[in-house]
Image 1 (cartoon, rainbow, N blue to C red):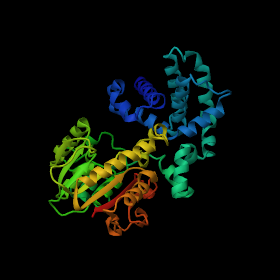
Image 2 (cartoon, rainbow, N blue to C red):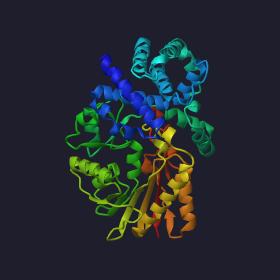
Image 3 (tube, rainbow, N blue to C red):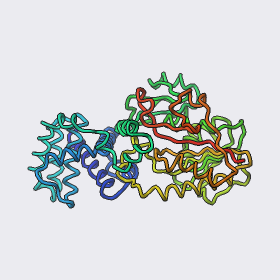
Image 4 (cartoon, rainbow, N blue to C red):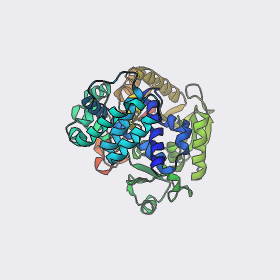
Length: 432
């Protein structure tokens, strides 16, 4: 067991380096790491937990390491710094016994020629953290330390500092697993030992491990989908049989939900690989939709649609609970290109609609440039589009989910007592 854990820690070290040194998304690193795939299911989960927790708490951990080091590490000492970080996260945030965290860090150093001579420093810093770390952590401003300056400034300016702090604090927590039930949510919630949230969402608060082993997976009774994502898809209104296009559709949670409402759905995505996953999910759920590989900027349907759901590519800052690597990979300068792409996709989606048709624009971003500012710019440049306000009953009378303009906005700190939500923005528009 000790050898397996050490191996999991070694894989975690490689994954961490991929994110912080090579700018690789964590999910991409997991997909490409054969050593991680070779681990047992338990140790795969442990390796991912190590990296995800470290990325959530990186600001705190680095501040503590700076406090404990007599002199700053040199820029080229990235392997040493990452190994210190790996030991620190276990000691301070994962309740790993000090002897295990320290001894495995030393073993990893010894296996790396460049680090073998640093065992004394590793031992001294980690043992000091084991003694003093808890008191030091208690005095830290965790929300501020773990939030990049540009995100903190953006959230404070738009939401106010109190809400920005609440968002940042909520983003430090592991997100619960949400499932959307095909039907009979109450029945499946009992079987899965979960709770029903918003009609068809089942929330599991305990770690579930491999979701394919949960009751109902093989029966096609549910699919994985955050509660806020399910809420946004449900905001598209239409009669049974309405022709609906789901743009940027993969991996397919919204496609599945739209299909269960009786719409004739065409799912479009530029990635053939990701659409294979969508088709597999639809097959498991015994649901049918037309699936098309195509770039939404160029692809057009044979006939105008009654409605389009555009879940646009975005910075995804509303999903930091699930993807803490994004805090360290996104940059403020990225937004201009993302906003331009979203504008192009909105124009394309409007071309696909019949007069009177509905466009539901959705992003899992907290940034105003990608949400309300994007819509304000659209309404300013086009006179043939109007906003259709979302009614309180469509969001279960949750006033905090509605903006003054009648758009949908969920924040990670919403429903904190039940485990929070991903951050989403949605606006419903009518083509006049």
